[in-house]
Amino acid sequence: MSSQTLLTRRQSEVFHLLALGLTNAQIAAKLVIAISTVEGHLKNIYRRLGVDNRTQAVSYGYRHELFTTRRNPQ
Image 1 (tube, rainbow, N blue to C red):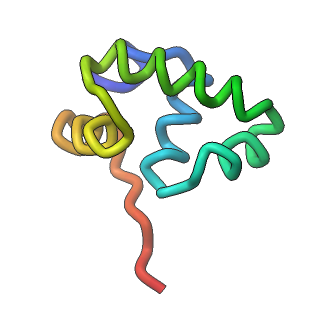
Image 2: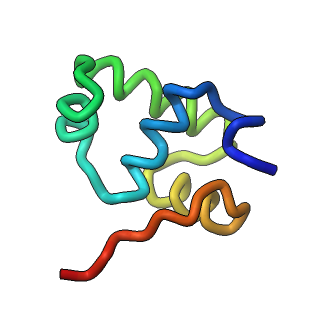
């Protein structure tokens, strides 16, 4: 199952940036959208995945192989 089947294209973009560890403000800046829009996308992502928060969402994503993006240690 891919994130494409669960999430819209924009939600997938937000979700991948979330997995990289970006804050809501950083996601908003990168996608050139309002922070409130990011928050709305996150609420919808959490609902669609059946989770309650960022940590659970990212954990779900890795467990279900929705993405393979990992933050590179620097």
